[in-house]
Image (tube, helix red, strand yellow):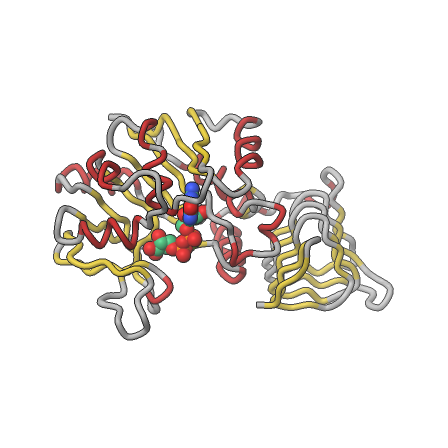
Length: 320
Ligand code: GDD
Ligand code: MG
């Protein structure tokens, strides 16, 4: 049957500032495609409707989807005040008729949604959470499993208090009863208020392997781009140096990087070549005569000095 999706994209993207001051996190490109568009296009065909739960920079997100066709109905559901992950879902309730497929908007993964749905139906769970194993679970939601049943859930537990290494991967299948449990009209963290309550009471886990990255920090944003670079042979367009207004000069050395449209990389005054390693250059960025490593250059940013592990945007810069 059909499934309707809710994608949570109303967060402030604080950990990716200053990039997210001008561009919503959801529209930051991963291998040149805005991360939210990538997610919407990757959904199984049975997902005929997608509700985007928006708040911060809602207009930019709505405008982006008004201008493209993702082959399914995409609506934006705004919040006047940020309602948190749970409140945002609850706010979408009138648009959802059956099982909801819910996503955090900043995840790139190899999760098989059809397989997760098959388990969800077979167990008759109220909710099923995709789970991913990590070495350090402390900055995530942590699930304790007994068979398929989640018997404990803790959001961002203090170091040493993690009950398992299986984390909430930010993708859920939720029955209407779960959305109905969420108090309306106030801020609610689904992780802290609802998943804790549903542990041992109908919440199941779907552990999966393959790949998973939350692209919400500078390091993980670079890692997500690097992962897609490896996965998508097409990311490097043959002849990219001569397409459009992009210019990659003969004196440029580019390794393991993603170079957006209308970017310029070449020699400068102080260095007769330019080196770009493990970096992402967004549209219109330019790098000249410098060594740039592990950096994110925001839209239109011009860099002429060496830099490493930095986020650079017109609004400012961040060392990480
Ligand atoms: N509409 C709306 N309103 N969306 C919101 C709000 C809100 O008030 N607050 C957060 N979001 C969106 C964010 O835009 C993001 O897409 C998603 O909800 C999750 O928020 P993050 O701020 O990225 O959370 P996190 O990364 O610290 O933790 C979450 O994700 C982890 C996996 O990456 C939690 O769900 C953890 O349990 C989980 O392990
Ligand atoms: Mg996140």
